[in-house]
Length: 391
View 1: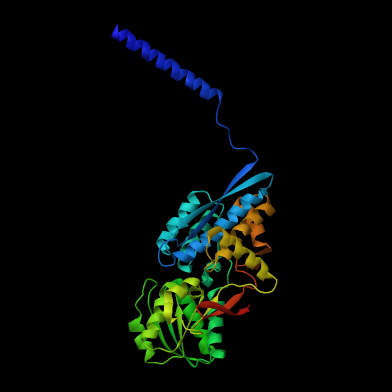
View 2: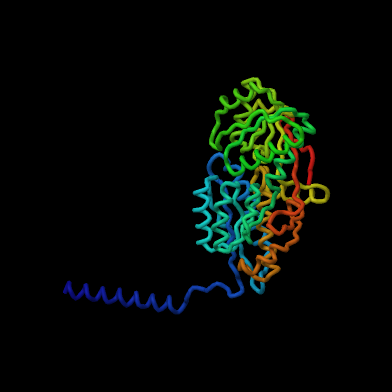
């Protein structure tokens, strides 16, 4: 009896399972609508490590643009587009950057915003180029990025030739420096920027009394600064980021060095104020941001900053507007061409004319931004103070 009972129970269970299968077959899951198109956009930058605040700033700018595009319900061709941001952390490390780039390619992204730094953008650009995927960097400034002959490589900011040249001339002509010393962090960014500054300062009439080297992870500069102090320069130029620039300025004060500290966009951040603390005296630091808006463009930039603050409850650090515009540029090129496929929308991206949060965007033949702006700043009363926008 027990065996028969067990067999009966088993038969009933099999019958119920079969019924369940019939029900599932009768009501299959709904397939995606034929008129919908999922478009994956990649973002790559350092969201861990010493410059994570800048990488997250860019990622947040890109994400805000994605959210706005989805809210607007735009179409690409005859299909309703849904955009998705795939974000990868490269930790400002070239090897990790290539791994992140390959991951985005394998995920099927149709375009990439990134990377944050020149040292990561350069190796990653080879991978995107091989895959035929357009890459727009919102913040990398090494000139080589758009001089490799890659059809899909674009830059939204001025390059190191423009940055370093402007700072070299400004140091001599406006700050009246007769002697300058240079420190670079040996990254692609730091070396390129430092070399351009040194050439411009020397051409303007300054004497270069020293060129010292560090690395992008260093925080102790006393040995270098002691060597430089003996040469009594009027200006010390640092080719590097705020994570090193802040401690460097504090140590300059401790050693009694009176020279002005001058640097590129890596020093022109809100974080520089925190990192340098009490050493940040008025008109002690001068820097240039590889971008800027003036005239009628200011209004659009202010609207973006307000939307960014409302969304993330924090101020823009540096290049979020450029990452935001990068996403919008990809979307406009896709709309214009009627396709999200890189080979089809790339010609529209090359020929684009766009008015965005970072001003008017057009690209030259190499993928650089036409008429790129530079904004000169100093720090006063514990805040960044704009001096001039130059082009």
